[in-house]
Length: 481
Image (tube, rainbow, N blue to C red; front, side, top):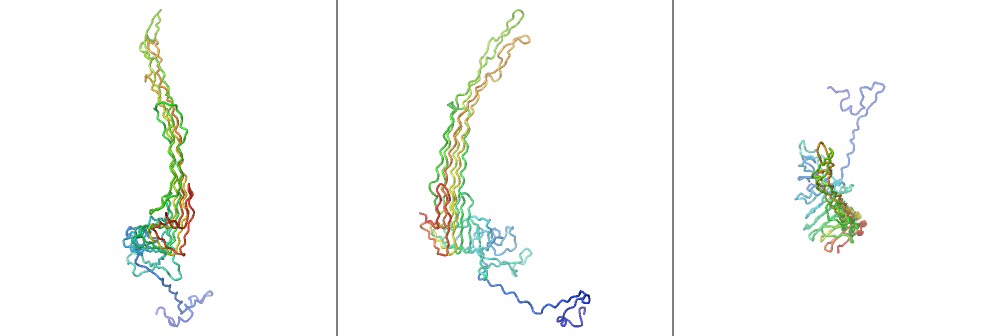
């Protein structure tokens, strides 16, 4: 045989192999591989829970009409037919049959903000799952299909469940007629629109029951909307009955500040804004416009000859005068500045006639939003300049007669000029707007008809009320009177 040797195949396996270069000075030997195979790796512990039938949400998913599968079949996240995990809770709950929504432990990046998530009867949203990708014999056999399949598992020995942190819009459960449940989630609700209130979970209606198991909610509201500056007053017109032309000196009154904080209702929180400033006063119309000048226009020249010399003179003339100017109107008063918007409130949980049960977890409300600065009043408008009088005649006429080229001819053209306009008084500035009230900070807000149940394992926390004409309030629990 081509590879036969004197020791035989089996015998050689028990001796040191020689390299072809053994006879060289630098030759070395290589021992055989050990006959005892290495110890196998210990089997990975079996996780307590896996799930195959649910609507799945993952950070690398994509929203679409077919999303929600455990792992994609034949599509990419850029394909409208993507059938892998959804990217957001909102799209996952669009599935009519969605009763269990499971969320990957690193599901939603914190810079991804969802619109409000609307819960419905008997739905469960559970975070803390981890995906494990494995080679799957049952994976679709297609060149376009992935070679891996995803196993979703939870409560694995030696591994803590990952936190599922989601930057989200408010979670809303309204007239659910049943129970909705959230498990192992960390929800951050941070409104960015000035003056809006940040509410983590809003549960409304006597038929609504929401259970929060190990759910951490934090809510943070922004400051109020800045009051807009008042517009400038309109400039005065150029034709008004004459007056004294005095400027307005009294500005518009400032708007009133908010005197109390905003109010809560089933819909949320209504911030208390400052009132707008009053408009300024208009200026007075100008003094009477200037009078026009006059000229005597030659209508006929006369010639007188004496001692061979001809003298020309005005035989007849017509007096014409420019018109009197118009008086400028007073400038308009500046518009009042807008009141500043009140700050939004930070509320982790709002319960209105609903039942909410908390098992562990925490509710934290950040500081209430501060009221912004009010708008200043606009400046008064300038007085009108008045309309100048009209010249008469429109084309200059001759005012003298002179002997030219054998005859008397009119010379020295001129016209009566219109009078100069007079300037009206300026308007006064508008008043500044009033300041809004600060927003409040509450972990829980409830009305008398709501029931919120929690024990010592649930932590509540709050910040301070926002600054404003009236500072917002702060407490762990606020019961709406």
